[in-house]
Length: 394
Image 1 (cartoon, rainbow, N blue to C red):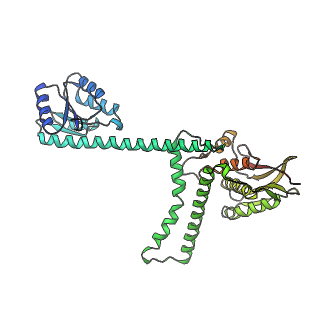
Image 2: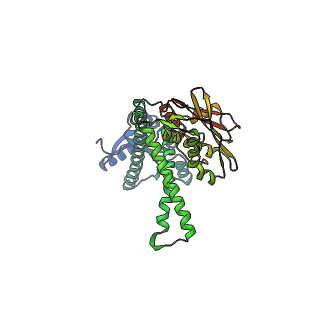
Image 3: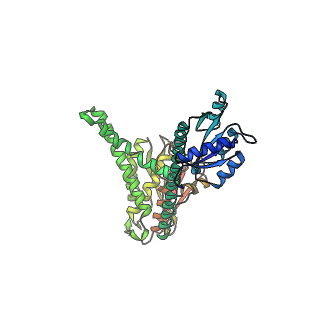
């Protein structure tokens, strides 16, 4: 009996209540009877397996429409219930009221009992489907939270200062899905455009190929960022050697040159001090590339981004990337330093990105024995400083 659909039958006419209960029992339902609305609510509170309420409309104390409205308001999809209303005084207005109350169906007395069975079976199927869908969503959310916590724990065990921060895993999943799927659009579109022997004009094909190349580069960057995020610091071995600051800045500018040209932004490399600095040039270049990417995203067309290297102290050198964008407040800087966070978390923001640039740059600077510093205020642009020790440089 526990596996049978459970129906709450509500009617203030005892003989009719007993007659319908017997018939539904013979038809394969488990039936819980209630003589009025208050008794029905008590049964609902005690028996969560009830999926359908079949109730008369006209009853003393609490009519069926009031009961239906109460049920619809108090029971969500986790314990979904469908209500079927019945009355011996059917009218168009009664049917309209039933719909407004959220009823699954409306039956008129005298009823054809086989029709009642069919309606109740459909109502039970709908309630069961709502409960199953809710359980699936809850399981997905629980798994997402577990994955989120596992990633936090993994990062914590790695000894990294980079920790995932946030209270809304669904929002994080939405941003990640958007960033991963967007580059796939041109990659998937071109084969479709060339299917069935179709040909494209040379200009159109070249344009599509450029979009495909950019999409591939973006997916590679995403993969590199995620690997960087998850790789334990001890697994990375920096290669320290003497490098010229001017050379580092020129190479960083060259990496960003194409993107700057697309956005009509000029790059200026300022004169730098003499001497060399002992650091991992590849790691430092990755940091500067992240800082330049942020500067390009914030800078208006026609503006200039300046790259420079200036002494920060007698034993430290600061590689700087300065833009003339809108700038950030102290609170906005703090937010930008959190992984998977952006000042604009919407999917319609002007620029893409997963919000990992600054957090990963900060972690890389710690491995280089230095630090990342962001200087800004609203309306005054941003100066991002990658500060490294001179070490044995002279």
